Image (tube, rainbow, N blue to C red; front, side, top):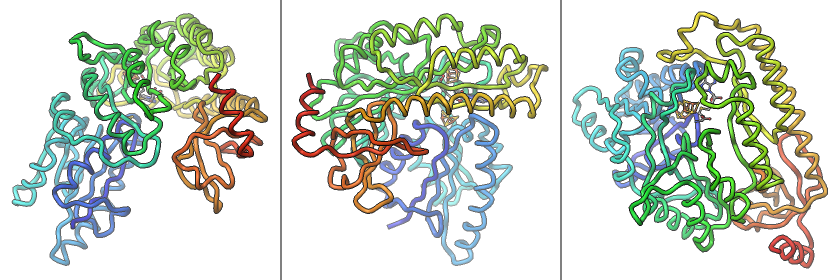
Length: 456
Ligand code: SAH
Ligand code: SF4
Ligand code: F3S
């Protein structure tokens, strides 16, 4: 057996892809390993979204180069591969910056890995693949075989046609592509047969999903979700990430009508200033977003909203930033991600001469994060005393403890629940900790009652 170590950076699509690469290489005799030490093959599955993310890769490669040399001194080989969005964006440049790298493979070319490895073993120097045949990738990667517990990710859509002026994704992942409904269904059923109870459908613009249905027409995400909700044993569905422009009426209605669809929506807005939204090429205004939030909440009043924000986009004034704070106050987020704008090579905003200073970006990020954290704490506090269902995913830190997720995606710990991993169980939320909620198992008879009440 050869040892394979994959290190994953960036978004959930990379997590999904890393698992697919492991499945693809298993028949070649590669068994997954927890560390890079002494591995026969190391893959860095990289992210290019912000400068920091991309630079991390080169420092990691510096360390791996030494490990590779140590292995070579013993007469053994370590194949070093860079996959993911840095591979796609930088291609050849990676080979010149770090000659120890053997393979550079973009996100749409993983199916080529076996032949690339064979090339390296034959001793033909380097191998580079950065083409964009997305259909190929999904047709040739093996189906999701190993699942890591009862909650799994399933990529249904990849790529982006939106070209926000700050973002590299349309360049690294290519054009929007949706997997056919039949393929998604087959993969979902296989996962459920393997013990999965909750599926998160993934896509860079997942709500722009237009996959070919069995009837030959293009199905929306709402229609796909309705079909998956009929798969026996699949008890929870989520999807991420959505674009406000693609939030169709049928998807909003699905949150009202489909019990398995969880009341959590990640709906990035990026900024609360119309001028900045226009400069970002987001294709929606602040008013559009607020009306959308209202419609979503009308369909599902307990919806927990999450978002992404960028501070310090070129030209962002104090007033623009204040408008972002005002939007956050108006919406009330259960959870959110916020970032300092990072100029990315080749994107239009990077060439804008109105860049905001680091000091201003730092101050704005701090202020925004403080507000978002207050909102998160307020949302969590409203959960105390309530009964909610938790899907237990893994053991907690304390003996006998288990960790799971609430419908609103909060982490919940409960004592004495280790035997319940893989099950969806009602809990009473007792308190809010710094990073998770604490839940208490209900006595069996209470649990049975609570289950009935919730089903009603
Ligand atoms: N497709 C998703 C998100 C993709 S990237 C969407 O459109 O919402 C995830 C987040 O990273 C983005 O929502 C954005 O907030 C952030 N991001 C992207 N490019 C960035 C950049 N150049 N600088 C800082 N943050 C960025
Ligand atoms: Fe990037 Fe915008 Fe596409 Fe999201 S919608 S991936 S932020 S270009
Ligand atoms: Fe990063 Fe690529 Fe995902 S740039 S966020 S790994 S799509």
